[in-house]
Length: 187
Image 1 (cartoon, rainbow, N blue to C red):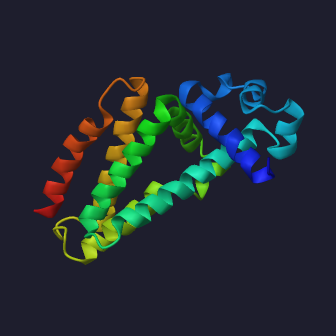
Image 2 (image 1 turned 120 degrees about the vertical axis):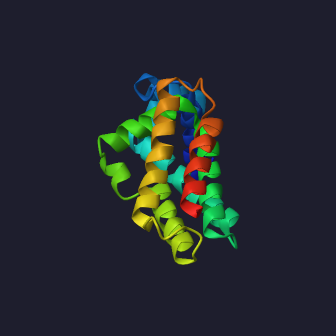
């Protein structure tokens, strides 16, 4: 098996484990066993569990960027914002509340991995500015206020979903708030 194929297999195994278990409960021994490699091979190809999570995060980020870019092409600013949130929620559902909780914890702790890779933040900021500049929002609110309201709304809804261990309807709960905010900003 080629090095990049083996890395891909290890990341796929780890992704499933991170979805089902808390990060600290996933062991290199378990990842190695399920990947069909020795622990020594894991260290040779990956280096550490932290490095593995960084690889997993970067691949996830690249997939999200590609998906958002593809699905928002030729949409209005507000449509881009709505599409972005749907992709974000789909991604969260795919990876589950345990993995999402770990991402949130790293973000809250301002870990190096998350300082420069705020994909949602960057896309949302750009799309809000685009919608604002195209006259899709009422000038009663400035673009920074609109951005902050939407960004904190999704963050709070996701945090609540994680706190409830994924037992609430994230999409439905966010849609309620999103629709109220968008309708207010469009007035």
